[in-house]
Image (tube, rainbow over all chains, first blue to last red; front, side):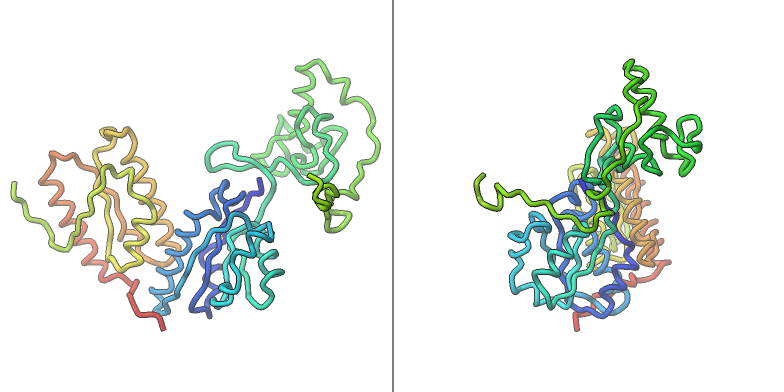
Length: 225
Length: 114
C-alpha cells in the first residue's frame, strides 16, 4: 500500500488559519489501512483542530466526509458543488487525493494533511517499511524475492557496496543491508550462482527518470473487459 | 459507605475502560470539560484481560495531543482502583478536582462561531 505520515497539528493549523468553515476529507484506501487518513484519523484531527481554534478564541466549523477512494474520479465527483460551501478542504489521502480533487474542483483549495512516504507494508503493528520503489521493471525474482532497488540505499544490482557491515547499511544503523540478506538467502538455497552473472543495464526509462508515467490498459479503455 | 466527593465530577459509566476511546476524551475537552479522568480496574485485574491497559495507552496519547495543542496534559488522567475501594474512589475524585482547580478553567472556550 501507499504509506503516509500525518503532518503536525501546527502545520495543518497554519494552512487553515484564515478559514472559518472547512471540510476534512478522509479516504478508505491505503491511508485507512496505514491508520493515517481513515474515519478515525479524520475524527481525531477534527476534534484536535476544533480544540486548538476554540483555545485561540477563533472557533472553526468542520464537516467531515470519507470517500471510498480519492484516486478515482467517480468517487471524487460525489462531493459535487457542496465542496464550494467551504473556505478550504483538507485531504487526508495520499498525494494523489489533493490532486484529483484540485483537478475536478478548480476554484477550491485542497490542503494535504499527510506526507506521503513510500510503497510498503506493516512489519508489525504501527511499523511500516518500504518494499517497492515503483521502478516499472520488476526483477524481484532475480534477487531471492528481495528488491535491491527499493531496499538498497544505492539501488545496487550486483552485490553490496563497501558500506555494508555485519549485515547493516552504513546509511542507517536500523537498516539491514538488503544485499547481505539476498546473498545469505541465495547461499542457504544453494543458488548463489544465480548472482554471479553480469546483468545488462537496467532500463530506468520506466522509472521516475522517464518523467511522469501513464498506464493505459486498452482492453479497459475500450470496455472489452 | 455514603462517602461524599466533589460535586464537580460527572460520571459516565462504561462496561470496561477498554471501551473508552481517544475521541471520547478529546470530545470532552473540545466541549469544554476542564478535565477528564478514566477510573479503571487495578492493572492485572481486568475482567477483559487488558481493557484498563488499553485505556492507559489512550489517555497517554490524548495527553500527547493536548501537549501539542498547548493545553496542560494533566487535565487528562488515568486512575486504577477496584470496585471495592469506595474510599479511594472518593479520594481520586477530590484529588482530580483539586488538580483541575489549581490549573484553572479550561482554555478551550465555547465561543459561538463568528
